[in-house]
Image (cartoon, rainbow, N blue to C red; front, side):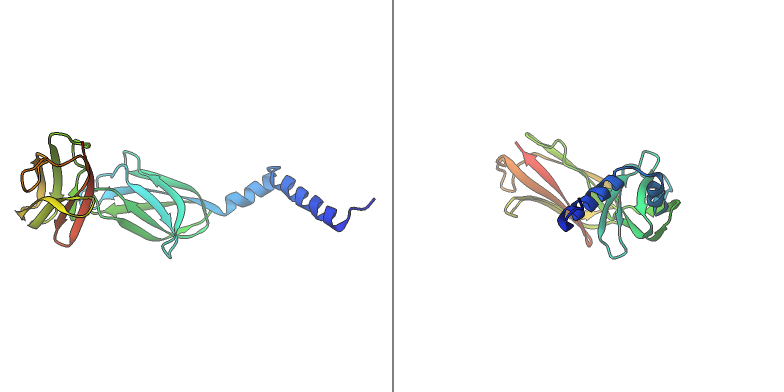
Length: 210
């Protein structure tokens, strides 16, 4: 008995599924031949010290995210395996540094080694501590350049509830706040946003008041 056209198509589909699931060594070799690995080290551009816990994101030259990512180890190293052959960009992110890029990385069926220097951000605002806060909260921030600086707290409607501003030198700074508004009233429990502005840069952190 010969299979009907519809039955024949079903048999062909079944054969393809079985073929892909057999793990034939030749097919595995073909996959390996078109995939490579990017390994490298992220270092501070000024001190050359390794940067730990930096996020590494693989993008196409057009900027599209490929879905492949990792983070640097304590010695600043990372590896992204099983990358199809081609040309890519790496995006590097870490809180107290500027976002950095390494562009035009050509991946073949080998390990591609890269070194990535990353510069300190113009300003950096640490997460409020403690957070959630009850009686008081502390802010820590750093400026790369001296100049006019503004630190303000806003409610979820965007209204400023407390603010500080002035000329500050470069370096680290700390500020303690008793969770009282500009009129001296204790803030109600809720979600607030702390924004640091200096020069053309700004950074915002979320604060929960209990």
